[in-house]
Length: 153
Image 1 (tube, one colour):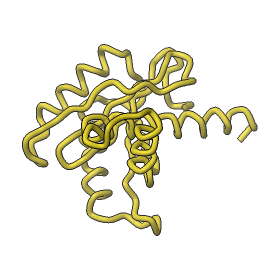
Image 2: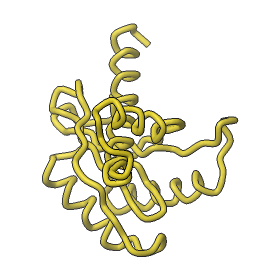
Image 3: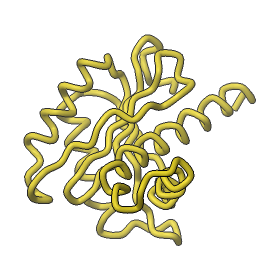
């Protein structure tokens, strides 16, 4: 979190083929909160998605963006990771903000488990999964950075 202006929040993004889940940190960087899911009709139609992200950056006073990196179970990058990297580069170029890639393996599985525990009907999981995954990606980053800062790393 050293790159982030200490007064600015963090934003977490879970980039999918037709959606982007969005979460933001609290001002003290203790908790990530789900915000919304940005939906689009076609995987390559991103203009409105970028515009909405830019609006949310202003609304929440964001200084750094954390994007889930969909690595393969082996840790290798596949096609989805390459598309996510392109998305991250475009976000960085458009906003001028630092962009951090965070390993997101198993966040969708974890999001489904959280919804099961919360009693969300299986048929409703799709409505929330990307937003919760963004929250988990951001919380993972914040937890690691807080731990690293506290341990002198």
